[in-house]
Each structure stands twice: as C-alpha cells, then as structure tokens.
Length: 187
Image 1: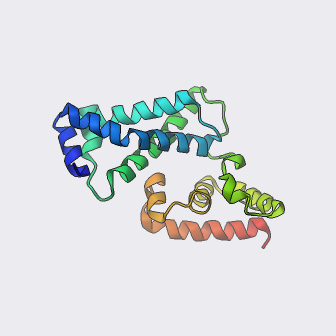
Image 2: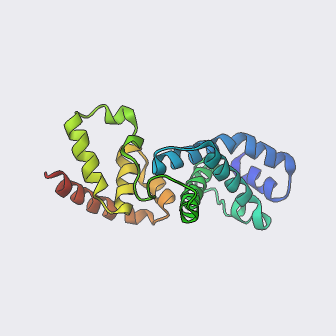
C-alpha cells in the first residue's frame, strides 16, 4: 500500500492500517526522536525518547487525525514523519526545560561532542577546536543551520522542514552564517 492510501485508511479509522503505519514508520519516529534529542541535548534518555515517540503518534490521531490529514504527499511519508518528529522533539525539549525537568545544555547549545565522531576525526585537532569555537559563537538559529548542513549532511529542503523556515531563506541564512564563521575563525 502506498503512503497516501495508507494515510487515507488510517484517517478512515482502519485499525489494521494504523498498525501497519506504526510497524512501518515507528522505527523512523523513534530514530528521529533519539537523533534530535541527542543532537540538541548532547544525550538522549530512553524516557525522553519514549515520550517524544508516544507524543508524535498520539498527535497524529488527535482531533480526528488532524495532523495526519495534513500529509499531502509532497515528500515520502518517512521524510514527513521524520520532520514532524524533529519539530515535536524540539517543542518537547522547550516544554520540559520550562518545567525544569531536563538538566542538559540549553536548546540553543548543542554539545560539541554531539558532532559525529567520524566527521570530527577527519580534521586536525587544532582546526576542529577553531571550528567548534566559531560555531559556538554563532547566533542560535545560524548555529543550528550550520550543524544541520555541514555536520549532519542535511539538504536545504530537509533543513527547511526541520527548522520550519521557508526553503528560500536557507541560502541567505547560510551565507550570513559562513561570513560569521570566517570572522570567528580568524580567516
């Protein structure tokens, strides 16, 4: 069954279709929750991953499947649900930090050790340290943009979805961030 049909069947209340959707895309939701929490907080607790996972799936069903109905097949369902999960995880972090239940770095400060080790190891130690310091001095939005693009390898389209900003805003923001990085790195 293709993505659009599966979603339509879920919206109609087909329990088997919902079970199929959870079986097929639940692992992507779980992985996106883990990745986003780890990326932003520098670590991901099982309880927080489970809360995001459950929140996303519950959110798809609430108000007569309002969120699920918003899937318009502009991308694959996996891409869409990953983006939804990343946004939900960021909102979850904000909400939990307001409550004081998360004892991690602030949302705007992703820990340097959250940078993928395989990419970081390719750089000499002194260059890597200069890069980390320059990235840390960027404003929060540009910092996240740089990390998503250069360190995580996301496309502009994926970044647009994750950060919830228009696709045509990515390039100007990236130019601004690159200039700030050059100034911050002393080049």
